[in-house]
Length: 288
Image 1: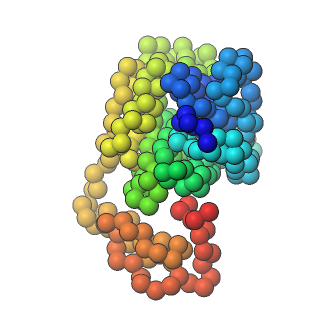
Image 2: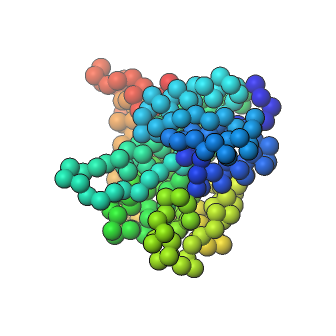
């Protein structure tokens, strides 16, 4: 097992993922760079501190293979940044959902695999940082699929954080960057943003806060120009009635996983065995 901390970063060869990789390597981390295309110059520059894996994050098998190879090489996994993402394209005759596949499924798959391998750490647990977007809260009205996919990432982080920390010793949070000058940003978009471009250093600062601040779980940090802002959770509009509507799902969790969630606000679970038709361990928190 390597003595240095180990991170997996998806979308590591450009943009935010590249900035995360450079920052972590400068601090002594080993980084497994997951991306669809290699950045040969970057990989050569970082040398033995990194290993590149060609990964399509929208394909579970592709991610699973490279998670396993990373574990076999280093013997530990401390941080996973599910960062890879793309913009949606013009509306085709049949909806092209590649944006959703990468932005949402990529995060789900990466989280499932992170749970599996972080259980194997000498001290089980770790940190997951997902890349959402300012669009997860402030809709990009011309790009509804992109906005919806990033909103899904934020809500997934909020919904999974408590149980991951309680059962797995894993903290999951997300960053919500504003307009960042990355290779994904067309020149016309950068020009329209003008002085509203957020520097990459702000996003890196947010990542480091999420790594080091153990009080943050289920949090979203908005990255806006030079500010890193903790996004407040929305208030339930009808008080306990609103929140109760979500907590009554615990019997279904119990049926699927054959144990109550243990969440403090959950409705009392049905204290019976799950249905014989339930697939044991089929959900996100399955014992893989």
